[in-house]
Structures are given as structure tokens and as C-alpha cells.
Image (tube, rainbow, N blue to C red; front, side, top):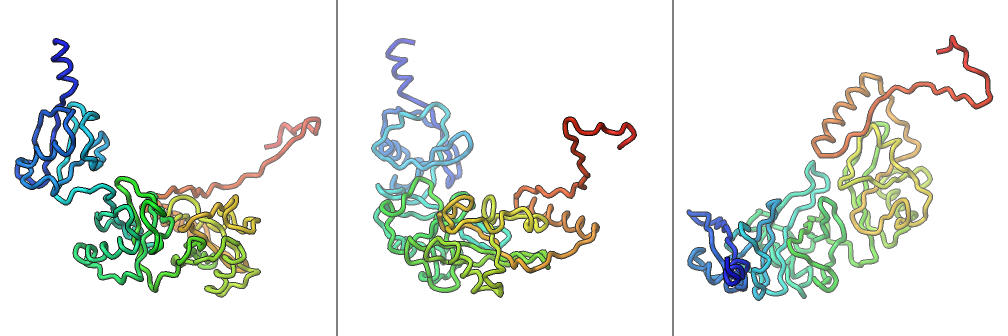
Length: 350
């Protein structure tokens, strides 16, 4: 190969295109990597069948994750042979726009995270404006007829609900957006009570040791991060007096599921702190899970058979939800401790 041919080879690549809307869904193209994305899309118009502004280009990586290519002035220099491209119909993103996946947060459902729609948010748009554009889409595609004042958007980190986005927040000023961003949409039973970033929204759940059951999630909105305010709010919404109210932070990813055979003993009940944002709680953002109980409530007494049956049910339930099962009913054995210089062990002793 001559130097000229080598240079030409380095500046070209063979791409495999997947046209998801076409009868002939695959196309292999030979391209010059110095071409811009805008010119590449224009050259694809005859094959896609629509103008370049009406289709999107996604680069497919080894793990089959797709990322949309949106920078029209950039070249294809990072592409190599056998890179796979997916072409999808739909309006291409403009500068400052981001494609967003919207999931519904259903805190009291067996599967609390449900995909709804793909939409577009733009830099400079307020949260309320994005809700105004989102609601008609939800009505059309998901048959959800929602009241804008009873819908909130919030941060989504894997399955964990996070910061509640307030209506006046502006994307890319108050809220950072990234490519392939995901958010939670939450339908409220009443108008939004979160009005300020100084407030804190905590998800609480009552544990009843006498019945071995957990109640539904209930949201508590705090004006500050004090333990006293949290306990006062929990006392108000339950029949538990302040002096008899215990609380503990949930562990793991939302919904912080735990076996009912573990919760009474394994959680760190009543940590000795006065604020929520310090160790061992570290509750600094919306969406944290807090369990609470009545300290005077006696645990249910279970026979060995009842305990064994309950353990089986809990193991099955937690495995279905993908949570780790750590409970093991090991029998305890007495431990004998001998000190150096102490009496020797009797040879006939077990």
C-alpha cells in the first residue's frame, strides 16, 4: 500500500446502518471520516426517504447502548470499520436540546419504575414549560390525563428517586442535563407542596412488629433537616407519641426492601444525631427512605414452623424484586472462652 493509499484508508470507514422503518432494514456504506454529520445525513436522505431534519442518527456501542449523534458540525473521525449506526424517524435535536426518557414513579407498586415516553427538553426551558409540553404527549401515547399542578418531575438515578424539580427551575441553569437523560414523573394526590430548595421530601414507611407488616409509603416534607421535625411529622400522621417513636434509614436502592424477619433488629434504629444530613444518616437530598415504629409495640411471637414459612415467603418476594436475601435462621451455639494461665480444659469435656 502506498502512502497515499494508506492515508486514504485511514480517512475512510465502512459503516453498517440499521434503518428501523424500512422494508430493507440494513445498509452498508463506505464513507470518508472527514465528512461532517450534517453532510452524512444529507447523503443518507435518498435511503431513509425523508429530509435529514426528520431522522436521527444513533451510534451503537458494544453493549448495544445507543447514543444519539447531534453535533452536526463534527466529523465522523472517531468512527471505525464495522461501527453500527441506527437510523430512527423523528425530529433531530437542535442545539441546546436533549432527548429525555420519562419514567413514572409508583412508590407503592411492586414495580415502582415504569417507562412512559421519550421527549425533548431544551436549555433555558423551565420545568413547568417542560411539563406543559409533556402532558399532551402522555395523554396521546399513555392515555394519562393529568393535572399539571398535580404532577412533579424529579431526578432519577437508576431506580432511586432524587431531587424534586420545582416549576421555576431552569434547565442548564438550576438543573444540569446530559445526553440520554432520565427523569421520574410522579402523580400527586394533591397540589405540589414542595416550593423551595430548602425543603426536604422524605419517603416514610411504618413498620408494625406485632403484625410483621409494613405500611404503604407516605411522603413527609420537612422545612429543615432536623430529627425533631421528622419525628414530629411522623407522630402527627400516626398514633405514636414522640417518646415512643423510633426511626431508621432504609438501606440499598429504592424501595429499600428488607425482610420482615430482619427489620426489627438489623436496621440502625434511633441514631444519636440531631440533624439528618450527618453520619450515619446522610439524608441530604429528596427521596430518602425512612422506616418508623412504636417502641412499645411487642413483636409477634412465631413458632418454628411459622418462622420457616415466613422466611420462605420473604425469600421468594425479595428475589422477585431483585433484592439481596441475607436472613439465615442459624442456630446459636454456646461459646466457651479460656484465658491464658487459666484452668486447663478437662479432657472429658465436650
